[in-house]
Image 1 (cartoon, rainbow, N blue to C red):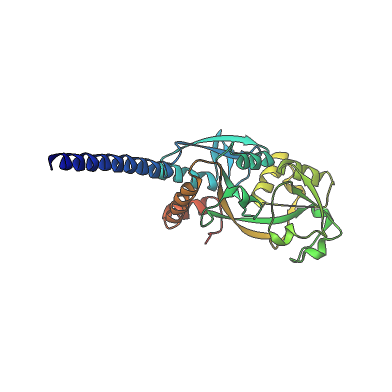
Image 2: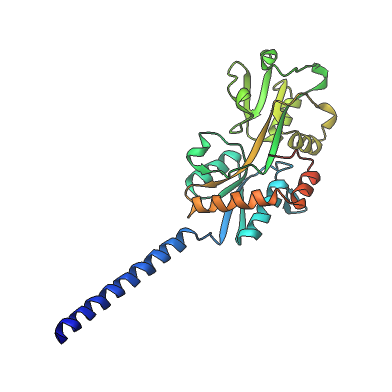
Length: 267
């Protein structure tokens, strides 16, 4: 009888030990699944894109930067910025060399390699710009612009209607600097882009008086941050981004950001 009790006790002890090991492993795995990286690499295009991101006295500014820095403080990670062409930034997100892009439209193609928060942090307006002497008028119907060449930036999206308008004569360039320079140089009659970025580049080139923005807007679209699917614990991380953005948008701090950068409120 004593031997049976002893064997039962030893078996029970072994089972308890195995259970503790499995529980520890499970807790460790669960914790690692919810671990946020201590440093995130942020991919930015090498040309400033106000009011979303731009250099101001050697410091990054813009509504996307301020929202991201708020999230970093909220979730407890630091930021490392890297700049390249826009296409290079997209490629780095796709390959996992960068963890996040701060300012991006949602497209099904990009959703193949990136995760988006539940809601945007800003809205972007895109407008046509032309040279005043051309006296081009736009009433919102893209069909009225068939005869003109339109400059645009390679890799950018300008809303579904424009993107799918294959009947338009679209000339692609690398950045806003080239866009404005070629518009003034008569490479094309129209260009399309964010009015803030267009105005900045025109000011820097000293040609603000040689361009005019056309109404109405080509598109008003939500702007998202996007996390690479190759970033460790990307699914958990994007969930935390969603919560942080949603909470921020309820605060006076966010309202102040919108006012500072003359932005429309996003829903």
